[in-house]
Image (tube, rainbow, N blue to C red; front, top):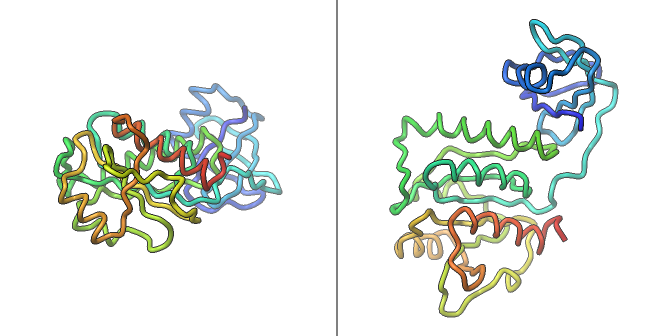
Length: 245
C-alpha cells in the first residue's frame, strides 16, 4: 500500500514538496522508504496527488505528478459528533474511529458529570493534539478530506457552534417510549450528541432538546459506554443515510 501524507498547504501539479519532520520520520525511519518510492500527498481538498520521493536526507522531498485523483472515500452525509469528553485515551480512540467512519466535524463538550474539566488555557493545546490524531487517521484510512476537531466547549458555547441544517439527535438510554434512528427522516447532515461516562444531567438534556432542537433517540435496550454509543451511532447513521449501505 502506498503511504499517504497530509500537507497543510494547497498542492499543484509538478510541485516539489518538502514534508514536515513528523512525516519525514514516518516515511524514512518507520517505513524505510528510499529515493524513487511512491508517495501520495493530499491537502484536504478532496484529491490525492501521487508523487515520487526524490530525497530522504536531510529532508524528505516529494515531486508530484501531473494529475491528481479524486477517491470516492467521502460520505454524502455530513456527520457532526458532539462528544462529552471522556477520560484517558478514550477520546483519542473515539476520534480515530470517528474519522474512519466518515465523520465530518467533532465538537468536544465539557459537561457537569464529565471527569475531564479542561481550563480555557489548556483547550487549544488539547485541540491541536486531537486534530493531529484526526489527520493521522485520515492518512491511514484513505480519506481525501480532513475532518475538523473543534476546541472543547461548554454548554454556554455549544449553541453557537452548531450548524442549522440537518437533524440533531441526542442519544438517550432507558427511554419510556423509545424513538429509534429508523424513525427519523433522512437528512443530508446530522448532528449526534453523546454524553460522557456519567451521562448528561436532566438539565443538560433539557437544554439540548428545548433550546437547541435535539431529538432524543435510542440505540436499543442495552446501556452502552460513551465510546461505544458514539461509534454505534456513527455506523448506524452512515448505514441509514450515508455510504455504508
